[in-house]
Image 1 (tube, one colour):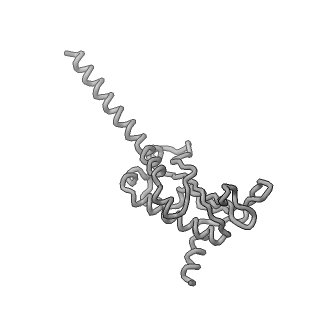
Image 2 (cartoon, helix red, strand yellow):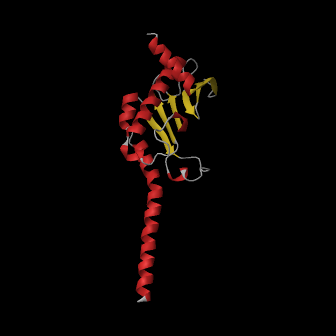
Image 3 (cartoon, one colour):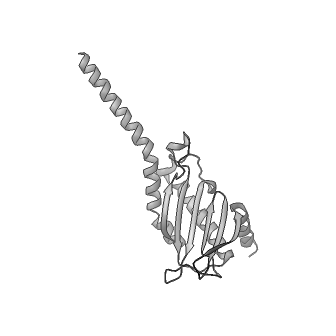
Length: 183
């Protein structure tokens, strides 16, 4: 009789352990599945997915550890844009991406802070010409939102890069909104 009780307790512990570990990894699977399946977003924004991930910071403490607290996503674009046009594109794409995240019911329960906003988003766009080479000199080569800062770079013919501008997300958003209201 005691053996049956021990076996029953052992089976219960195995089941509990399974559900605890499967739930803790579920956020990771759902978050990456969301990023992998972003074809509609890519078409709408004329982008090509080049890299993605969630929670790449290993120093996250609990309870954040078992939830989505950061998205990292990078895209390619075949456009040649100046600083002002690249800013508009980046702000528009970030806004669209945040809408996609916050409207997705499948990942909403896994987001640590809902609604998800730009402060926990690493979002980058690299620009290439039709020959798959980085656009150079007078055009923006890449623009990246990282920790509330946006960085803009140009590529030089010798293969080097230069950061030409830096601004906060709020500053860029304000510039874009002011331009819209002045039209």
